Length: 394
Ligand SMILES: [Zn+2]
Ligand SMILES: [Zn+2]
Image: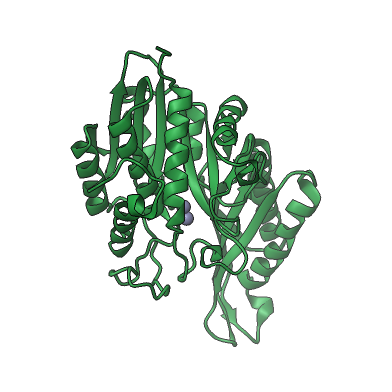
């Protein structure tokens, strides 16, 4: 059923079908039981040593060839998002309010296509660990797998992951040495005032005025405290207070998203937010509480491993298809935690640009993974394994 070559439409058809099947059956973070089952069944059938239930619903497939001691890890993510799909495709999600809006169905299919070819044709010497992780979308599935002994049980000398990117021409491979994806932290600010009659503001302490003042004060952190050459974002994404025009409420709540591409900037943002919130609240006579929740770390690609990964692309793909040093992004990605433990690199694969369907941004109800990337992505994975774990010359 699964052919070894990935060069023709007919070769790809089973993997496109597999991708669309995963797309029809999306599963949220740590609920990827069906998806993990499909992955494990395929890998087992192709001769991999398969370990299920790593960090919840994670799956690791291990394949050894030859006698080489080199160990490589390739990661794909499996989870979907709580979004109602509006793509209109025949293979659209069959689950209400849940869809593969980030292309993790495609990442899984690309890695499975590569897995199949590596098992059939080999062409490498060493150990390949294929890591299928749960809960990339905010759930920290990478950390859960690591807490479950991922790298102790399946040691890797280097690790790699690939994510599709709408807005970039289909099949473009985008590399970047150094920081690439932002840290992402969350904070809830609660402002406790004294409620009262809207006509008697002097008898109350108004948390709404304090909230408004804090929102404006926060705008000075990026513009006045952060080095202008360093990216940083503070977004107040939710603000909630009061229910009536003639009542001063006792409580206001703000929800913040805080992003940086450098660990010291990340710390500076937290320090300044805490100081500003406390000072503004105090000056306006309300009490402030901050619940700070650290999210994903800054994703930093190892320069040496990135150079190796880029060289593979340059050797096997036309120069026009390889972007050697792409831009930093303010999205975040929990592969960052794996990269803190094992040197490696995270790369992007263009999902389509301009007016093409693949240009629709991830996390949008009309988004879909570009199936043409199953061939490109799998060919890249196979080339990476063979170049980094070369077979001895006869
Ligand atoms: Zn996403
Ligand atoms: Zn994603």
